[in-house]
Image (cartoon, rainbow, N blue to C red; front, side, top):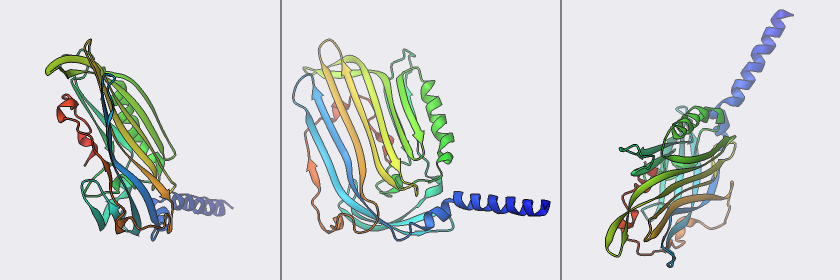
Length: 282
């Protein structure tokens, strides 16, 4: 009887380990096609109560899972528009087990006045023009994300320039809003003047049980002001799955759906010394 119990326990543990295996989970997605609408860049700028200038670049694309290798690589075909280029029809690989969702906040505060002189953030997996769907494919064993996510939260909580953080990571759904107190300069009538304000990072992403993104959105909002002027600048990217598997929207985005692009002239100097999204792209 003891031997039978041991065999039953071993069998049960084997089944549990099999169920937890990312490779087994991902084998079922081979051949699946996922359709997305992507907004690679959406920005707005406003000075005082003047009109808001906006710029948007968005398009559709699809991703077909070609293979999941023994080395824990997902091979996929990307077809459609991608950031910084025209339409693509190319194959890529990404190590999905190493693709964990977390972030790394950077602030520069040499005078220790609780006001950052510059700030930046990494979102992992990073977006990449050389691997355009990498951030949409992650490890589907959600407990593996906890260590890096919790360490990132602890680092933010220990940063004296951070005004607040609200975050959550639960079963494939990840969110945070981080507000950093900053100082910098703004241009007023041709002169650069000192100003204080905030920098707000907002991230929302959710993935299905296979680790394929359902939606992904990240934005950065700067608000600087002094007694003479106020300037607001927001920039972000977002991706939404329009169909899960199969023919989906019924239109092949690679076949020439026009790129939507509405541009406004926003001088680079208005970024005002803050590092706007430099490390979003890996």
